[in-house]
Length: 200
Image 1 (tube, rainbow, N blue to C red):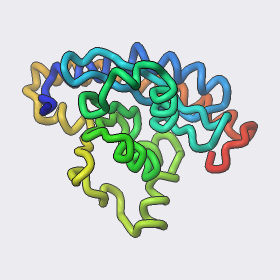
Image 2 (cartoon, rainbow, N blue to C red):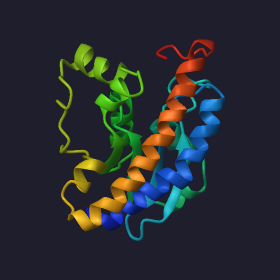
Image 3 (cartoon, rainbow, N blue to C red):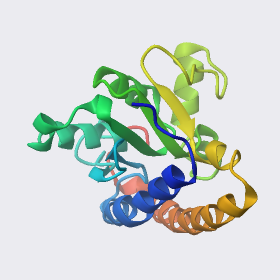
Image 4 (spheres, rainbow, N blue to C red):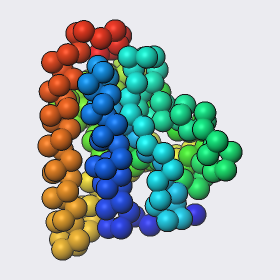
């Protein structure tokens, strides 16, 4: 099923970030975890299947996306839902591990709000770009966003294609979301030396 990349999709992705992922992330950051999270939505009607957040203080592999997949496969809903029928929403552009996890679990898409550059510059978490450069020799944005496994799209890239009248309320909501993440980032950075996350 083709996902129509329009204002309705963006509005729903932003709503899930604001109302489903962010409350979980606020709790997670208070426990020493990073600000990354994700959600699964049905392609058919954009209804929420599951939302989760980073849980690296339990296990450094539990990035937002991987922790979401772990929780999904531990839930009965995994037996009733096909990953091919779902949208994968990531608050931040997935790292190489999370991109691979998305592929291995059969998703054919992911959408993200913050870019790898945002993670480095706005959140002081440079590991995604460093991993791409050091392990794979790729410059920022150098991986294939369209490949045999999935199509990856930035939410702001979709908004840039919309008419101004449709884009403006979405940009206003996006600004509100960014403001909340700024607060969470400050809280994480202030306490990160107290956690045991290897790449904090």
